[in-house]
Structures are given as structure tokens and as C-alpha cells.
Amino acid sequence: MDAIKRETGDGRSRFGDGLPPPTSRRYELHPPGFLYLVITVFLAIGSINSQNNLLFLAFGLAIAGFLLSGLISGPPLMKINARRNPPEPGAVGEHAEIRYTLEHRGRWIGAMGLEIRELLDETQDARALGAGSAGGVLNLSPGSATSAVVRVLPERRGVHRLRAFAVSTTFPFGLFRKTLIFEQPDAWMVLPRRIPLRDMPWQRSGRDGATLSAIASRKGQSTEFYALRDYVPGDPTRQIAWKPSARTGSLVVRELAASAPPKLWLRIDQPDFGTPEHLIERAAALVSALAQDASKAGFSVGLRGRGVGTMRPVTGPKQVRAIQSQMAALGEATESAPSDSDAERSRGALRVTIQYQRKGRSAGRNEFVLSAGDIRQWFAAQEIPAEFLGPDEGSKTGLTDGSTHRAVRWARERLGMSSPEAVA
Image 1 (spheres, one colour):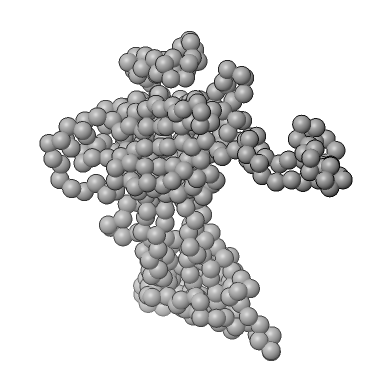
Image 2: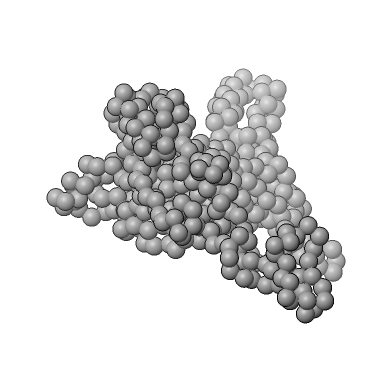
């Protein structure tokens, strides 16, 4: 707020020109206001027909309520400027926050009971925002600024277009809804759903009892010389450089360069025209989860594929977020008409190919394939999300015998498990 709000010499708050004014406004009769209007009409008819002073008084108070409802909150609302802050990426099925900054340029009366909502037109998918609650500001004092948060629960991945948002109030009597519309086009990215995966090869124990993640994250164990440094009590004696120590008269030890983390490549092609939507959702979530888990295991993760491009293997959360962002747009570029070969390929499931180094460069590479069609190959949870289910899959938890046998067979062949209970 300090970047927006500045104090002048007389102590009065003044604002910069960063927050835009509303593009339009509207007044609507709130449902309680409609009932209030009906009662006011009856009071008018009754007072005219009966010429009763008490009815005239009640009718006058009802008219005064209408006037006060517009005068108290209408002018202060017109002094509000607002802006949507750049939205942080969300994920399907997880609550996300969209933040706003509001300022009041008035001098006398503050704005009360403000409500903030995102507006969607008929061309936008309502699942972009999903279920959520409106944000609110109880009191926005004159000459002040504040922030508000709208919590949403997105149900569809992708880059969604945010067109405009509304700031409204029904203060003080709830008779009218007064609304300011702020047109602010923006793009909001929703990442694929975060899912739990079954144990992958880099999470299992090797022959020596150490996991691949421990081997991948171990530093300073290569044979390449890095530098010399002073001896510190506790350093292994085999690392002492005796000749340099004799020349300098003090003990120094050799530091070795850290081993480069093993690489893991994820390959997935853009889905062909006609590929079922639920398979695309599964594939996007699978690649995102593989990138997350492999990065935590110490691998540098890369992505490549037809229509996807190439991302060189890099370690760290930024690389994971870049891969997940790429998966958020998976399938959106498939708009061409199907050819015979495309129609044939679309009958198959999307496949994710994983290539990784098992124990350094000398041990070679390992490769295996996961199918988006056979979800129990890799999905660990019992309940399957709704967007992963096809039109002929009504149950979220049940597995057919065929998929169960395929999952057990895959576990035996790829993960080295010897009993079906390991995948139960």
C-alpha cells in the first residue's frame, strides 16, 4: 500500500495514478428492495384511500428510505478506483486467491459493505473459476487504500481470460445493488491437478540399499578437482593434500567438484484431433506430477515432444513450474481437421516416455512408458477425479479386472515388485 499511498505536507492522503477508474456503473433493484417497493405502493394506496395520517407518515418514511439508500452509499461508491493484481497461477481442484487493490478518493464519507466478483461473459467457461466466494471490504475510509481477496476453486486447466470484475454494495438497507464495472483484461493460468503417483524407479531402493534420490542429490563425490581449502577438524585424512601442505606449512584439503545431477527426460506429443478430453487431462496431470517428483528426487528434468517443443533438463522449482505451465496448455493447439492417420492414432491412449540415468553416466539409461489410458499404472489414490473419467466410466473408485491385471503386470515388470499386494 505504501507504493500507492503518499502523504502530503498537510497530512492528507493522496494517490498516484496507478489505479484506474470504473468503466461503467449500474443500479439494480435488490430482491429485498422489490419487496420494499411493493409494501411502499400498498402504503401509498392505503393512505390515499383512507386519508389516515399514520399511513401518510409510514409512506413518507418508506420514500425516505429509498432516498437514503441511494444518497448514503451512491456518491462514495463513485469515488472508488480499483485494480486486479497480477494473478498467481492456480491448480485444478485447489483453492486459489485473486487479489485486488482498492482506493477511495473521497474526502467525507467512506464506502461500506463492498463486494468484489469476477465477471464472465457467455463465451467463457464457468469452470475456469469454479466454485468460490466473493471478496469483501467492510469499510473503505476516505483517502485510504486496501486490498481484497477473492477465493476461487478452478475446475479446468489452461490459460483463462479474465475480462472484468465488479465492485458492488447494498449498503445501507439492502434495497439497491450499486455496482462499478472495471474492465481489465488479464490472463490467469491454471495448472493441471496435482495427483499422487505410485512409486517410480527413482523412488525405489537400489541393490546397495540407497535410493536413487539419495545418489542423485549427493554432492562433492566426483573425481574432478575443484579447489584447495584450509583443513577443518573432522575432514577425512584421505582428502589432505600433503605436498601443498608441506609447501605452505599448514594442512590443506582437496575439494572435489559436485557430481552433476542425473538427467530425466519426459516425452509427450501433442494429442491428435479427436483424442478424448479425459485422456488429455490425465496426461497433463501425469507429466506435471512426474516432473515434480523427479525434481524432488534430485534429477534435472527436461521435456520434449511433437508439438510441445524442447526444454533442456534443469534442476529446481522454476523448471518444474515451466513444465507444468506447458502442460496447462496441452491439447489447446489441436484444432485442425483429422486425417486418416490422425483418426487412427486418436483411438490409442496418450503415452508418456520417461528416460533417466540410473546411477551416473557409466550405468547407461533406463526407459519406460506410461499410458494415459491405463490410469492405475501410475495413479496412487483410490478416488479418480471427475475430469479423468470418460463418458463410459461412471465409477470413481471401481477398477475393472482387466485394468487391475495390467497394473499388477506393469508393477512386476517395471518396478520389480513380486506380489500383487504391492499395488493394492
